[in-house]
Image 1: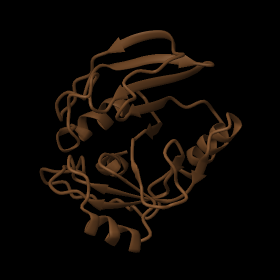
Image 2: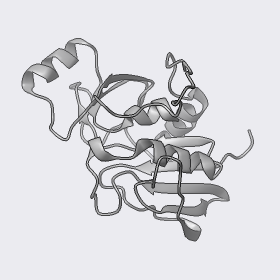
Image 3: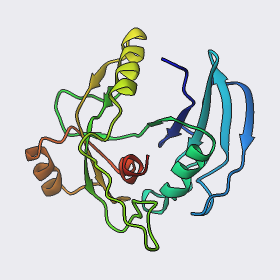
Image 4: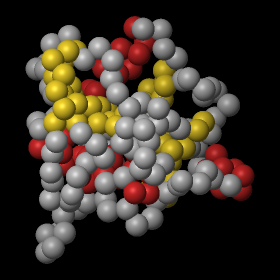
Length: 194
């Protein structure tokens, strides 16, 4: 498998990446405005990586106001082929504990009003979301996490709420009946745009 340029979108608490070599900050403008922050380009073990803190450094952008289209467009403009979106989430299962890693393979969108397509102004495109996660990348992430001893689960459903409020007890109870594994505020519309 050839080496791909990897984009990493850091969520709450992940505002920079350690271990990058040959680091440079890159400013990118897009037709959708500016991304959340400068992108940081570097290398890890010879693999080119572009890092972007989703909420900006210092967590200054709330989930509803992240410019998701600009973020994804900027990564793609710089040649990224694989995107890893890291998010702090809440567990909806007794078996998923704080610090566990879940690599979801499905999403439920409970957001409202977030632009979730690049196609507009007379262009209509229908994109399948049946399998929204790359199985090859999921497997690589799973193996890497396992090799370093992380508690990791491959597969699961990520339900994305609008935020910034957390769900009510009644909503959480409903989401559990849907079989949701984790609850977050940011991986949609990222998964739809990527």
